Amino acid sequence: MLKKIHHIGVVVENADEAMKFYRDALGLRVTADRVIEDQGVRGVLLEIGGSEIELLQPTRDDTGVAKFLQSRGEGMHHICFESDDVDVELEGARAKGIQLIDEKPRLGLAGMICFLHPKANHGVLVEFATPLAEGH
Amino acid sequence: MAIEAQYIDHIVISSNDSAATAKLFADNFDIEIKRTMTRPGTGAHMEFAKLQEVILEFAGPGEVKPYDEVKAKLSGVVLAVPDIHATVASIREAGFSIGDPHPAVQPGALFTGMRGGTNGVPFGFIQYNAIPIEEKPA
Image (cartoon, rainbow over all chains, first blue to last red; front, top):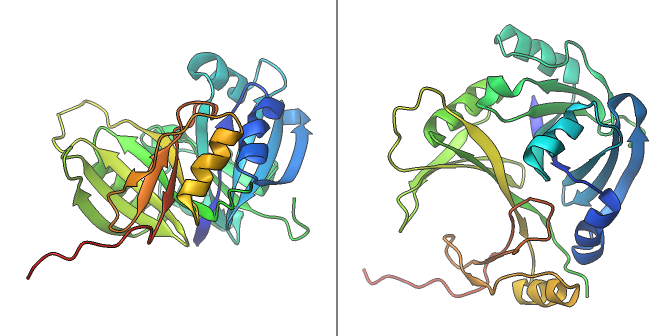
């Protein structure tokens, strides 16, 4: 069962520059900041209430995030729903015939994650996440 | 001065057919559409779901044209703040541009929006219980 909005993903050119607004002006606390090599992104999570804002900065040009930035510029990239069990959510989506990007959950900044194809949601990219017990 | 943003109040998903997009999200994710409304002034059709404190707002035109394909996108974020005037002052002090607070659609609330500087994200702030709610005569 989906519990809440875990985060919204925002693609940025430069996470350090973006944090001048999100961290410095808004005062949001950074809960994670690391490069995910296999996805070619630097991800920064900032806490806001029970949710987070995830800044995504491409670190190379051949990734989906880099292509999003090249074609659309900076902006909102995806919405992530939190679940207690991402495997169950993924199987539920598959059973409903929802087009998937990830056939099985993988490790991401928010925990175990998977993405659904935006075509399944009128063009909106949706992620499911189950945070790891030890946090980010 | 800290803004003390409390939580994401709502996330806007705009669509050329907001009723269809709301129904799709309800079906795909087993979320309940709790309210629908026509926005005063613009006639926009809006539907709302809520997960914990965050409202998903599906917004679209009041009159749906027969498009071949329904298209939606994430189109804004609004944060709840305890003192919108302090928020505006703090954001301006940090060098960013933001509008003056004005009454929101939500009764008793004040709203304002950023004017750029947010990495392509339309960003707004809302303070609930900011102004007295006008009582209409019976």
